[in-house]
Length: 480
Image (tube, rainbow, N blue to C red; front, side, top):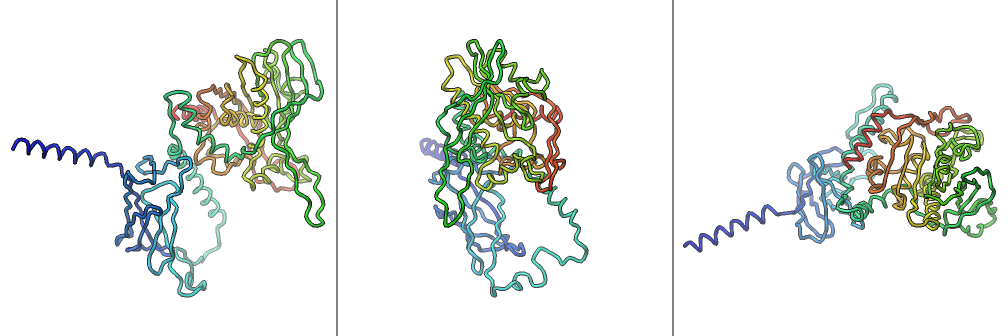
């Protein structure tokens, strides 16, 4: 009798343990009429590939339970009482197939949240004409009786998207899975995030094998020499023969970088890329041309202290080449490249990485590679070191801040889908475990509306964030 009771207790304990360790995942939601929002009962919801099926109840709700032993590997994160998919590299989309008689078949891709989904399906039309859907007006709408208040409509759209931007910040966590057990483990754990950032910046083209050409000696001091340099960045594009009688285009087929090289006369302590703002010239950053205060000529000070320094030229914000319009050189490049999944930022990052390739070949033991920048140069320094782990120290001045108002900045800074996964704090976490120095500084006030010429560029401005804003974003980086 005692043995039977003992066996019964063991069975109960085993049952409790199995119940507590159930790691199944539940996908929940509601199916409704996509036209009028009424709940649809009896709709068949199937998880594609593994064929798990559920039917909606009279409230239109359903629950799909995915067992832990399913070959469909799904990882979720709990954020604010909601469950979100954690995207794994190379994972396929999770698709729900929704079926109901007299309704169109729907394939619904789950992009992030997996609970409380709202899925609308459309009825099969009895007649293929507009009256079937609209009659006197579209569902969920009323006939307009008053004059359209466009300002209120535009304000409503703006407020909606501003709220969405704020809501994105706490949701970014689901894209990250940092392993801080060691430097190597950390870099491996954020590699997919680094790859995602590179892709959305468009810094993905194959670079040319590194070669740096000195053209002219510009200046010389007791401690260093200054030379003009250029270097190839991307592989040359060979255009195909012109079609029909089209003229051949006389345009550059390759991206090059240009700048100034400062070489110390003593043994170099290390290598630094010093990037000016878009409205500054390299010559001003080393003090051979007016425009930058002596104490802010950081490229000059680095060379005087024994470092090999390259000051690259970056595309400016003037409209002098824009044929009488207010479009800046940077936004002119942006307007063409974003259609191809590229950005002006991405191209200039690859200029910096080509320099890093050269530094990497030249350096000896104990010589470090660093990067520093101000304004748009700070942006490039920040992004470059986040993507290239060979950079050991980064100085960002006049850029680091919250990015929720990036839509107010010049259009050339627009990066598709950036804030979904990245704010400045998240990008800073890609620089770890290397050193990041953020200097709070005033930046040149910029208002694109004041550029002369026909107004075709979207409004955009640059401003100095408050110290508290910068500090808050930096502290968020510590929490990342």
